[in-house]
Amino acid sequence: MPLRARASSFLVFPLMLSAASFASNSARADEGVAAVRSLLANPSDLSARLSRTSPLIGAARSRVAQAQSDVSTTHLIPNPVLDASLSGIPLGHGNNARFADSSVWNFGVSETLELGKRGPRQASADLRAQASRRYFVGAITDRAASARLAMANAVRLQLRTLTLEESLHDSERATELERVRYEQKALAGMDYDRLLLELQNVEADVAQSRADFEAALAECDAELLGHCDLAGTSEVELDQALPLGELRIDETEIAKRPDVEGIRLESEAARKDAELARRRALPDLTLRVGYQRDNTAGGGMAVDSVSVGMTVPLPLSDRGQHDASKALSRAQELELQRSALLITARSDLQSLLKHKQALEHTRAVLERDSVPRAKSVLESTQQAFDHGGISLTDFLLARRTYVAIRLTLLEQRYQLFTIRNDLYRVLGLDARGHENDR
Image (cartoon, rainbow, N blue to C red; front, side, top):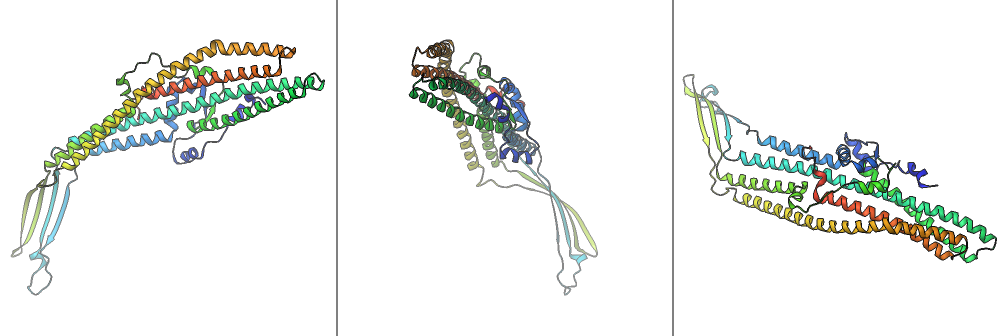
């Protein structure tokens, strides 16, 4: 049965257990059929779908909410402290003391006034909230790149299987025709056996390709949390997806990548932490207002009084110097990580552009010359073989060469797609348009 007749059965694989578990614990559920042709052509639709369904993106969104809560917390003032005490409680009757004449009541409210610390603390929390939003965008772009790769792989393996099935059909037809010649003693037994071996080899290739295709569909289903619909997909989708236009090796553009920008913001937050630690050398003031009722004056008289006070810690030993040093070291670590990312990104960009240029040249040669020539050779060889003009070996070689060149061209298209996908990742192109996402 040809692949197209079976394609619908391949597109109903159940979701992976992890996706099912996620759906049972989250409001984000399976989105049903995913039209691969549309998602490859429209990156924004793919990002929107993943934003709704991906548990990893949902986790990143939760981290943004956590960071924003930390920002809100830094704008609150410390809670006041209420204290109360009772003293002068008599323990016996030997001295004729009475509770009403010996007790002293104290009530007070104290408040801590932070000096020079709220600004750095708020700035640090705000920078980390900004970093979490950049990491959230990075999660979207990472999942989009992974999903595109899974979809393209499914398209590639479908086309590969179709090509091999076409070759299998031709082999079956040729074998059936040669069987008649063999039964009429017009074909040597050895040549007929070679045809049978060739047919078995093609059948094995088709079976392996079908298995790979089914595995690729399962992976695509898991990536998109839905059933990948490959209807209408062809080599055109691999060629036209992810247009790049004119590329420039611009470090400022690479530095805008969500992961690079997130690390920069975290480094700035660590420097604010160092500033906050150094501000501990400036002590906070604790002010107290109290009320006292003293019943010890005698004669049934009580003395009411109000007190005010202030507590100032003395920063003699701990002035935040070690915490400041630790925060600065953390900032330096993050800056070095960012520099390493930029170096790797520039190297990856150079390498990808060179591979892209080489693959585009190879693909052009295959499309313009190799495939048409191999097809013409196969047609001529087929006619010559049918009339007994050439040997079976030459015919089989021509057919294998034609199929191999077509599969090579398909692989070249897929490799070019993966390079463009990697270029989108290296340049952070998927992140554009998500700056305000939450």
